[in-house]
Length: 359
Image (cartoon, rainbow, N blue to C red; front, side, top):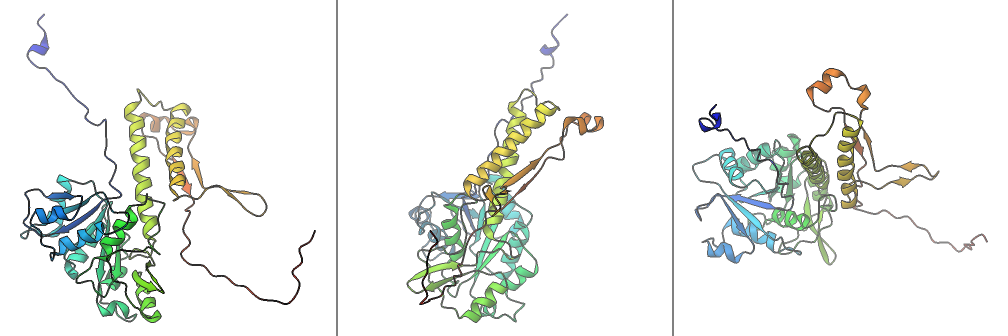
């Protein structure tokens, strides 16, 4: 009999042996420009922008320059092109189609409509958007119409707003993003960071309290040093928690994916479930090493306070129908956040009494 393959030959390739992890340390500056033919341009210094035709007075240049001015400086910053005839979601789809390996987003044009559109889009994607405003109403606790108040009212967990009096010329959001992206997720806090090439604001305590009441952030001078304050997204969560959560989710998802595709089979038995648990435990241990998950600690009675717990089902407790679906469910973990100390309150006293230590 003739070989059927001579007429119809079918080859099916599974091109899923690798999956790129998100660039949790990469900033994308998005703006309208006419330079280059690519949707995404990648730069390693500001001279390359000038070579491509950007002017030093361009908003995109200023935002990228704010990134590269930080110490340590990022290895690269990306610029996404937003064509003038497009709406923002269309531009974002085209940018991601060409290069989705970025996490932070900065808009060169911070008009209110653009910021609100960007914040809405970001909320449904694994990205982090930051913006800045110099609107005096942001410093007014009674104002509900400024951009900071609007973002807070929408309870956005993936957008952070910074007050900056000189926001028309400087991009503190790009600077702080580049500064904190130099640290692995889980190891940073977005408060108390020094920024280069950004003018510090002089705020009264009333103004600062009004900004933080809206979950806004600031860059202020304290004696002889200028540092960031607060470090929250518009919904009120800490920025570092959002970034670490995204990183851990991607770490678990990617590593479990590799387990499935690199194993001849993960059996639906206690042995296979243990394989899944081992991969999950490794990701949580890495989260501890990064500083996002607390280590095991002890209370005053010597009881363990675990950094995380994992709960997986026994094979014998899973129904036949569930096993037949070949989907493992009810794998759970609880992790205790390490958190961060942003401020310190110390109470002390003086005395003339002797302070004797017992022998």
